[in-house]
Image 1: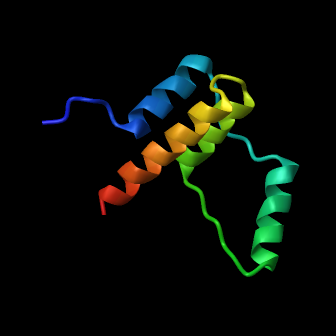
Image 2: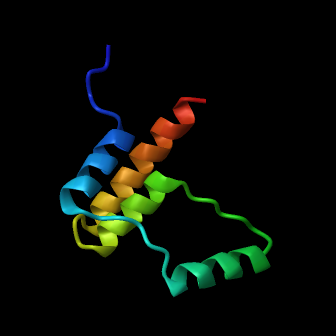
Image 3: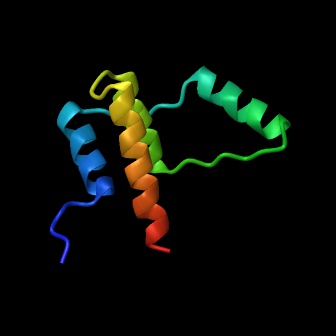
Length: 80
C-alpha cells in the first residue's frame, strides 16, 4: 500500500502554504493563440497551472517545476 501523498495533494498543499493561486497572464493567452494557430491544442488542468504559478512566484525552482510536472503527469495518466 502506498502511503505517500499524491503529487496532486502535495501541489495543492504547497500552493496553500504560500497562498499562491494561478492567474493567467497575457503571455499565457498569446501562447494559447499561437498554439491554436499552429493547429495544436494544449489543455492544462488546475494542478499543472498551480505548478506553473508556484514557479512564477519563486516557491519552487525550474528543476522542481519540471520534476513536479513529470511526476504529476505520470500519476495522472497512470490512473486511466
